[in-house]
Image (cartoon, rainbow, N blue to C red; front, side):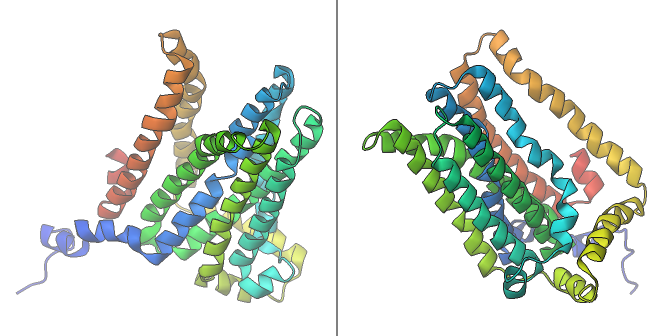
Length: 330
């Protein structure tokens, strides 16, 4: 009796994971670690963005100043510039105590907590410049955390769990954003019942800073990725500048050496191209056809978050069950 051909249905069913296996991957410890780190990554975004703008508007800051605060998000766009530094340089004590990735994770999260607490102590009405500095520090440390979490996720998960890990990360990221927007506003409202409005905002941000500890505890409970440990051992005799150069050069050369790299790059750009345009036009379009601001808020924070979570987990489930090309078509 001959073995089934690799392309036959029998071979496919033997190698393709079952539906139960596809669902069980979300309960793998490695995926759960990525999930909690995703929450920690999504939490700070609104604290230097939409939630901060609500605080400033309530404090009576003029619209022109509020509009300039869009520049605070610049570190999220430019984080690729210092990613090689995070990849190659050691953090005194932290790298030795926790490892290459976990050391940077704990270090960035502790600085992030400090930046959020600094922002909590500011007064938007009296010192908008200090608020801008605090928000810039929050965005910088948050984007640094994103760099490390992305590297940790890729190095920690085997290829079969990458899609599920990304789905869990995105879902938790969205939940973190929801907590720091709607959740933070509800918390501030609760504090207003016992303290003045300014103090309520301060304590709301203190609670948000405390929630970052979820990511810190997760980083401490995790183990250093084996791939990171091997890379660290291979470069331990190199100087700091040499490691940075090799990290920057390696990131680009490794990608460009892949088959059809430019096609992949074009796909990613075009994939996000329409989303960027439609994202900017969604609000005026919805308002123009008769919906109110409250209607739009309910859709984005209610139905929108449900659809995002469902789509993220469905995508990870499909990608584990089928090939990447088939999953993209689906």
